[in-house]
Length: 174
View 1 (cartoon, rainbow, N blue to C red):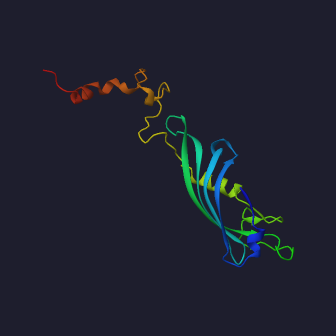
View 2 (view 1 turned 120 degrees about the horizontal axis):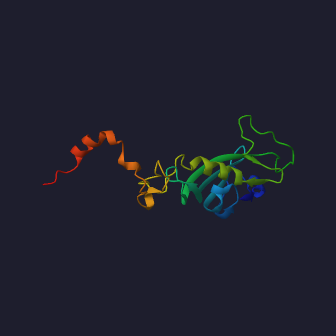
View 3 (view 1 turned 180 degrees about the vertical axis):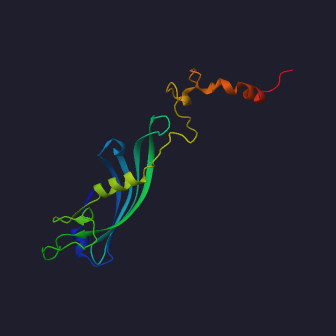
């Protein structure tokens, strides 16, 4: 996801380019896959404003039943990238004091979105992902996946000392 922005930086402020994004993101296990979306680049007074709407599949592990599942993550990125070298003179340009080093355009005038998109995808993944909203999780006693059926270990029977009260909740048989 690299873009040569030298022609854009030579144009007047406000000039823009649009690109269709359809590339493979290689990274740690949950963030491998095809990234699709739209990337818009606009020349600003300091650099290039990147506006992107992206969708990428991620592989997550359910926080209740530990089953792996795939889900799409949609995100919107809007960040300004700053050149390190002036495109017209070739002189070094210092980054603004509050600029993150990940948001820089290298000496070859190439803007690399890979790391920024990877970080944004990580922050957009749910903290406690669920394979389905009604996930039952695992049995506390035997570890069986309750989404696949009952476990049969008797963990749901409860404490026998409460048996008399439990009998009151059962329907009366005539």
